[in-house]
Image 1: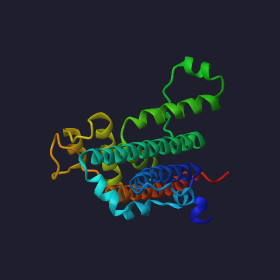
Image 2: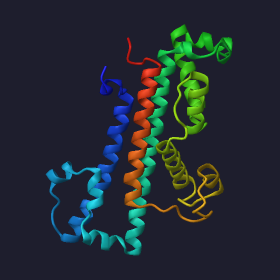
Image 3: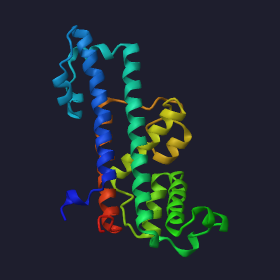
Image 4: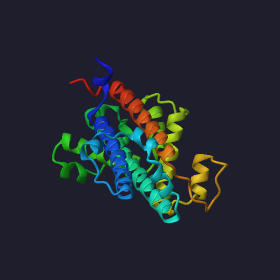
Length: 241
């Protein structure tokens, strides 16, 4: 089986969504460039753009974005893109876990199957009960955060994913960046500092967002998702009928 075959449909959907998010961001900048140059955007060229083009913005756009109001627009665009992409990763993770728990119900310990008689009756069948139980377990794990989820997969299910991997650490921080963007107006708080261990940032300050940061961190997030997907698919034999 090739490496490509090992990747799940869930991962492919995640990667495609990430690409779409970056293409939308690039589109915004191309529209800005067209507005500045008063030139109608070339739709064919727009479709051919990739994330690498973020590094090749027209000098006029760079100058334009240095203005106070325009810098705020840039930050807003980056924040929206990061938030949407992290949410997409969270969705991917929940879907691949649901796939694991649904296809491999045997991995649960007997002590984990705690349910009332009413739940069995409402389910109507063992497969339906297992499906509902899997959904419930995924929902519980989703509130634990990425590091705790991986610890669960490692300690309880023997996955063996490296929690100290640099890409994984970067992905965890990106998730925390998403959290402060959504819940704290993009400002660093105590929880962020505790979870990331950052000493170069201060509570109350805006987290610095740049185009280079987005490009690098999206690659790290994709690396983590790809590595995790390959390990989960192989470890739990998800591609075997």
